[in-house]
Image (cartoon, rainbow, N blue to C red; front, side):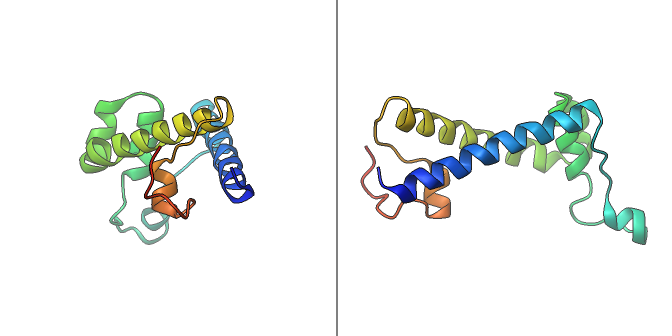
Length: 119
């Protein structure tokens, strides 16, 4: 594995760790969130409900999340979860078992230059 792929994997691992810490801070209530546009301008933005839906999903309250934003909850969250699970699997496969593999995240963000050959 070349150094570019190793750096890309390390950056992704750091992003996952930071994400877990941020999620834990939201769960315990140390980070408060609200809609900037609704608070400051009194109008509902196109993304209204996304933050509240995400917080509801973090708290495993899927019914409440669907009430805030149905499309986001039903379509986008499972898609992101599948991408993260695939990416973590590939990282484990590479760094622990020393086997080749490519994740969808690398394909999307171009982290691997020769992604045609999937092994």
